[in-house]
Picture 1 (spheres, one colour):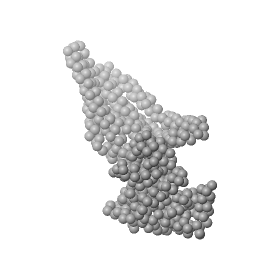
Picture 2 (cartoon, one colour):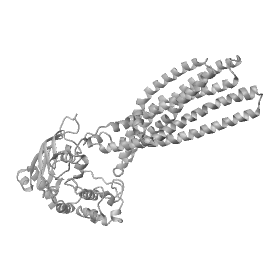
Picture 3 (tube, one colour):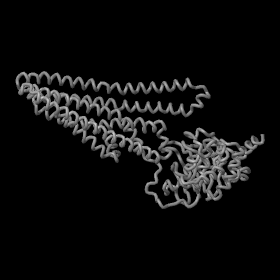
Picture 4 (cartoon, helix red, strand yellow):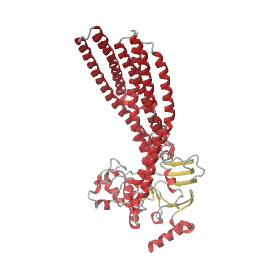
Length: 578
């Protein structure tokens, strides 16, 4: 928690200082009120026999001090709020920025629901703890010190009461902290599971309704919600004893002080006014201890959120360009794999790619075919360093991909991934992901090549049509064509089409291939497909199986010597003829 405070207070540092400053002023002013009250009793009532002028003057002073304390308290709350919101904003921004730097391997460690939870609910709990630290953890010690000073000034003979009470309170706090932290961490994991179920259900609501599985989903959500309730109750069952425990100690102290202090008043060792002031300071001390307890409980409850935030911030990206030459540019679209092997984690037993050696000339059109699970997609993801090789090297433009800055390398490579993703906003806004400075005419041209312009013009607002979150307002085939157009706008040296026409009909696929052949002249093109027709005209076709390159050749060569390719072609052509 304190490491986060140090690193992410940032531009709210002035508010973080002013908040405690006005808190201290509030404590000082509040501490003067019991002294004025003591004067009213001892001087105004006893010595002066009820002098109303004196009592009114002192009463006005008490009101003034109370108003001044309230003013300082309001300012303290204001600046604490400002600093806490900026603090959480800085952490949330840092976490989001860090996630943008993650490789695919890093991203796979954190499911979407847990990331969303960490950026929202965890940050809300962290803000509450921050406010407690900035206000209460400053207020309570100063209140304790000032009140203790006046207590010992008025009567030091009862100090032994605090010598017993404070260690008891401290020990209770340590026990509660140690027990509560792991429970709250488990509670946050249950919240992650609940969010995961909720997101999955909403994302797949069409499938749920199609298969009439509403009852099943309701039951699953109820179970997740019950687990959260159980974890929350288990976590909070330990912290609810805190306040009763502190109140027990506090009232025990009050009884002891009333007993022994009353004897001093009767014996004439202490005035009634001083005794009343003494009681006020005792209450202030005990209340300060209670506030310290509450602050630590807030920290305990937020510690799980702190740990989860630090996990995101401390995660080291497995793909980094630190120290790479910023002036190194991708000169052409040539690609070379040198004895490349890959597995998704260091602890994995088996490689998903093994002993891949491949050279692709700049401007060459390459098709890749293979059964599901043959690692076709994994192979091409090594080119823009979405993953790094486990063994061997990948070269682009004559240089090892690890030598480039990531932005430079990825700007030179456009990918249309298997899972097509569009973002909230209009079609034109989505197209500008490919080129932020693209003109409307350039966007229309790219969509025309991708066979998307025709269906766009049938939409009410055409290129200003809002796609909705994730592109829910267009079909799968339309989404694929928009993603192809977006990739074309990058004007890359290498374009990778990963099964990017699987959702369109054969005729549209053929028209896309002809248009791309015209558009992509001189650009290195890699086409991963299930249909032979999509790669038939490629300069070379790679046949992959079990993470290895089984054969390479053009259509005619593979028809002559590769049985799997020939069978696939004949099967698909028969289906076309039928």
